[in-house]
Amino acid sequence: MDRLYADHNATSPLRPEAREAMLRAIDLGGNPSSVHGEGRAAKRALEDARESLAHILECGADAVTFTSGATEALHLAMESAKAMGFGPVYVSSVEHDAVWSYAVKLWPEAQLIPVNPGGILDVDWLGQELDIQGGQPLVIAQGANNETGTIQPLNAISTRVRAAGGALLCDAVQLLGKVSVAQFAGLTDWLVVSSHKIGGPMGAGALIAAPGIDVFNGRAGGGQERGARSGTENVAAIVGFAAAATVACDDDAVQAYQDLTSRTRHAFELPVATALSGVDFVSQTVRRLSNTSCLVVDGWEGARQVMAMDLAGVAVSAGSACSSGKVKMSRILKACGYSDSAAASSIRASFGWSSRIEDGVRLAELYLEAAARAGRNVTTQVA
Ligand code: PLP
Image 1 (cartoon, protein in one colour):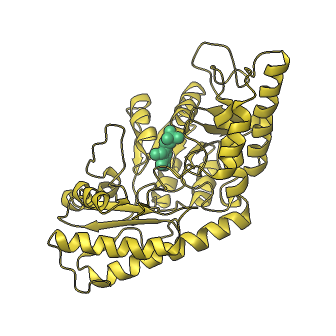
Image 2: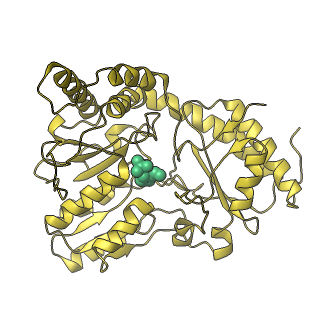
Image 3: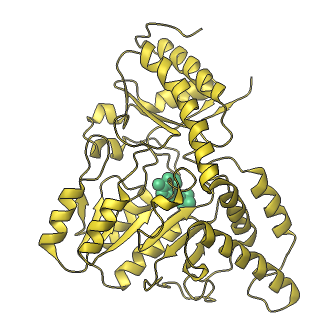
């Protein structure tokens, strides 16, 4: 039987439009910094991709710096904020490790922004802190969480930050293609997006800087990307990224994505909620991404759940996947107030552009079978 892929928040399969665009770009051959014909052709492809992404993200082309992915773009943004002298610094307690581990290194004194049990930032707490502390504050807050799917109230956050004369750095990796661009365009000072989360290739991302906001070039080199990021651009990956964004991000595409993924998720969550006692769907009571389902079954370790599902032919994640392949207790669920045991007992199913509603149905069946085999209390087996 075919495998079932439900891990789009980790990476979403390559869209055919991205693949085709990449194949054409690979054959261009030249270095975009070279002045000869081959170089100019590569440069044209690169700049066309930049224009496309800028159009989608409602910014100027010169606001777009291409990078090797979101991690690099986030680091570049944080280094830029540091170089511009922003402070005090506030970091949401539910940031991805790509932000978290570097932010605490750059600003050991940074304050954590608390979240409620659904993972929503405490905007009132933040507003009060900004009023009290003054300075030129930097707030680092993601758009949506990769594990729980919680969507942050970026508008309210941005309003508070701007009223305080500060800057907002936003990891929008999980927002792009999942909510309308109008909901986050123009609200941030640095915005970061990643190609492989929307069906583009891995190894491309972008940093979008607001007018008047610098992108600091910390690495000596060839001065590519208008001096903001040295190193030859990965033209084929960037072209694939722009092609994926073009099909994934307009309002009609986002609406179709939300319809498909919310129905697929419902087909999964309803039977599981009905049949499995003790299951807790995280963030169900707050605004969350239509494609993401995060479940806690306290006492059934996330790593074991993932292994059981993998053996059943299903790809899901536990906590956040990291490069070592180790699954840790979820720092995100801990920040939301879950116990150690619950935070080690979560899995995430995330659907996407290639999902079908039947995938949700099948996932529920296989999950309930695995739960029963693991000795959990399953009251109604789905046929
Ligand atoms: N931020 C979030 C919310 C993510 O989900 C990820 C991917 O796991 C990243 C950042 C890092 O993205 P990239 O793989 O492009 O470096």
